[in-house]
Image (cartoon, rainbow, N blue to C red; front, side):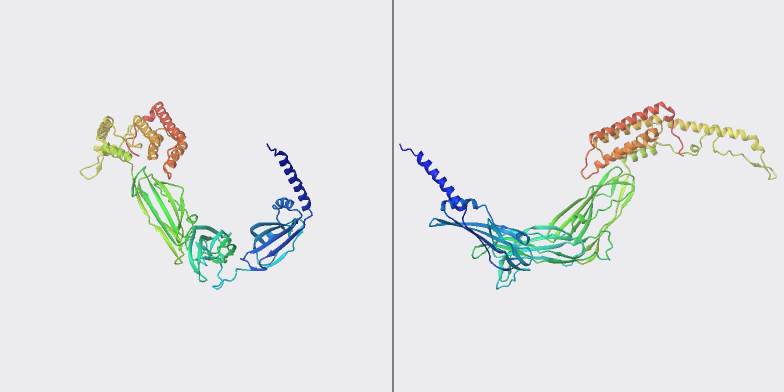
Length: 601
């Protein structure tokens, strides 16, 4: 069996010795640094190719190899180069050869530099280890290289706008086109300006166009610009930086192209515009809908009104808020407006939707005023008005109040002359005049002889007659079964207590079921409470109204919601406890339960 361990150990020691010897010898190797450029004059859109080469001679090939591996991480330094130049690409290559025991190494760096300005620019000196190069001056000409059919550019960039003199806040479409004869890869800048609102419009599109008698691929990007300041305004040149593959040779090269600058003259709104809010747009419409679409509504019910504004060529944030109308017989709860925007072939299509929940409070006929919104037609350069006509809404009495009133009128006895002649507290006949008969004698003289003799007889008969009629009328009203009445048409304290309890039950049921007529039921209950126990009603009025408003705000929001459990319990407990307290107070004070006056004041 052959033992290979001593041989392996000897080879490892030899390699280590050679490595140390090579490093020692390479310390004295000479290094040469050279710089070169492909041109000394170029246009601002062109690329400067800078080449840096380092030659290093090593005394031993193996040691040189080892040392070379350590030198790969080093790069030349250019102090201050980024002040005038942008390094858009950097590549490295290596070459080594050994002749007669001497190792020659060549390291090459290739830089692609883009000038940041025009004028005489300097590539500063390069430093690599102990070697230093000399700086190089480059003449940079402003603008792009001239283009013609005899010298078609492989790639170029073009910027344009659809309106050179827009109004303040008017939409402008800015188009950026990249023309290329081969496959292009890289980055393209986007327009920016402190006095412009800029939004991208759509995705990058690809088309083909003929330029310089060549068929170019065209990559197009569009942007929406909205000037926020009047006066002259300039959009700076945009830049493409990347690589382009020549369609014929299939060689890839660096490319940097600048577009043209774009100048605007932004105009102030015309002095003839009479609207409150400046709205420059291609088109603008306003519309309203109702759910349900009716013109009559019952007291306590609600309808939803939606008003939409749609504009082409105007940002949604520019669409104004419409004030909610003030109608005495209705409560109006506006919801938060919805503002949307979508892309359109002619720019941005914006909309604003305002929703209002309208609750019928008092019966009657009410007019919602017309809505007029003035805007500026940028196509025809004139003022226009978008209008929603006025609308008349009739609020009908709620069925409960109407039914009670009809029953009261039906069951009440007709008033007679004697019904309005109540007996006064001191037993006399109130305001009833007593007629004393006046007679004439044979000579035509007026005497009071018969009046003085029969006065007591007429007075007694009249008093007895009125007393009998009054007693009969009172008997009829007390013996008749009372009909259901509205809260303000009660006849006795016991009936009022029963009615308050009934209204209390209806109100608490409405709270539990989230009934939309809760506000009307709450009003009926509170009106009756105020008649029976005004002190108690004053004590709870603030809290009661607040809880009812919370219900209305939740029920008539954009998406109807139920009151939270805590608020429901508070409202229910307040109604039940207050009703109980009012009934107990009425029982303790019987005088409060006496007959209601027969005769209206």
